[in-house]
Image (tube, helix red, strand yellow):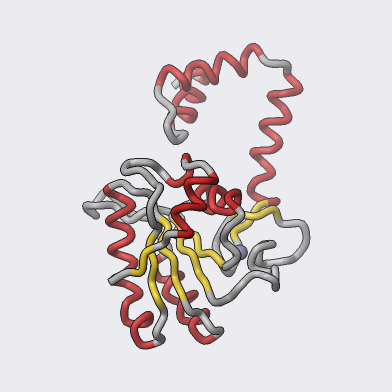
Length: 208
Ligand SMILES: [Zn+2]
């Protein structure tokens, strides 16, 4: 495989990027100043050493020192009574932008696929979630908010997580909520605006 083709293939793996867009990226890079290409390559190379996952909520964060937890998890003003479970980092960022939520998070890292076959492996951190909820339950956790996109995969993930957590939520009397009105069906959380997320959170529904 020649080099341009290889680069094209790498861009095609980006979420939402088709073959045509991937090709545009390659030609954009070819036309860009060499300094830009170098900066981009350097920043990508640094991801490995500079960015790490929080040992508490599993979101990615910029490691400035030897800290192991992110700024949200180390913020003592944030409530430990509420835990919001999201699929991806971008969802967490969308919720943070709405500025209505003041509790903690857990980033699953992936949704749970509808049909888990031999070739579909979910990267969802189910085991880690269970451990995090058990630990949070001992620290006064009162509610869990399942914040997933209103599409088939989001619904399935929500149901799987509910089932996974139900033994502990029942024995520890933790209320489980899902997002309320405002989010339209099929819309991904990351593409919802702050006002919509705010309304969905303020009208959160208690799970039966
Ligand atoms: Zn964290």
